[in-house]
Each structure stands twice: as structure tokens, then as C-alpha cells.
Image (tube, rainbow, N blue to C red; front, side, top):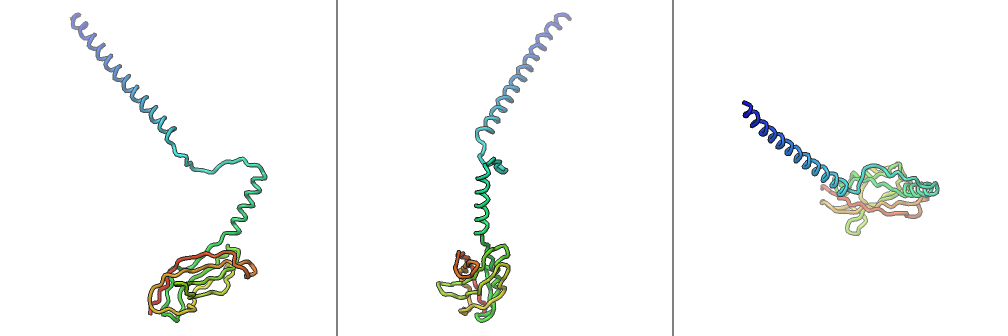
Length: 175
């Protein structure tokens, strides 16, 4: 029996060595994969990050930025109009839905053209005012027309055009 025990010990020691070798191989593979993952993360990261820039800028720069922001805000102008205007016929009113929103600082007027032909010109529209329906100045026959609406932004005296904004629209005349 003692001989059998002696024979079993080398086998169990051999099995322990095999288990140890397997564990060592698994740990080495794991460490290798982990190091590759860390390398990939730090080497191939995008430059785009979420968040705001925390910039400790001098007071003069902040004041200058505030002035720039104010100038941009004053120069912003939002246009609003139905881009698919429908008329019952060439003589009726259509659903223009032109609006000079309250946040705009300047008056405006709108002209609508088709193939260089003036179809409509609005009166001056002050901020906060609108034109829901209007007739065309130049009647159109039945059909669908690709047109351009130009928004002319004027100074507060309504004398000089400050900016011109174009918007593609469709006009449909049903009868």
C-alpha cells in the first residue's frame, strides 16, 4: 500500500503543477488583454469631449466677449412664414402666416417673387406683429409655383434695409 501512495503523490503533484501552469497562463493572458485595453483607450480616444470649457480668462477678455455676444444677439433675426401658401383662386387671400416675432429688434417687410416677377409686397411689420392672410399683388392662374420670399430687415426708422433674408416657398392656386 505504501507503494500505491507513493505512486499517487507524483500524479497529484503533477496535477497541481498543471493547474498552476493553467492559472499562470490565464493570468498572463488576462494581464495582456488588460494592458491592450488600456493602451487602446489612451491611444485612440476622440478629441471630442462632453462639457464646457473652464477657462480662467482675464476680465478684459470677459468684457470683450460680453460685447461680442451682445452684438451677435442684436444682429440675430428670426423669420417665420408658411412655406406652402395655398390660395383658393388667383384673386383670394392665401394663408401667408408671416410673423415678425417679438424677440426680433427691427421692423421688416416681405416681398415674394416667382421668376423675377414680384407677386406680393407687405407693409412694414413691426416686431410682435403678423400677417395671417393676404392677396397676391399679381394674380396667378391655377398651379403650383416655386417662389422666393425675401425678408427685408430695416433700421428702426424704417428707412434703410439692414439685411435681406431669402426663403424658398411654394404657392399653390387651386382654381
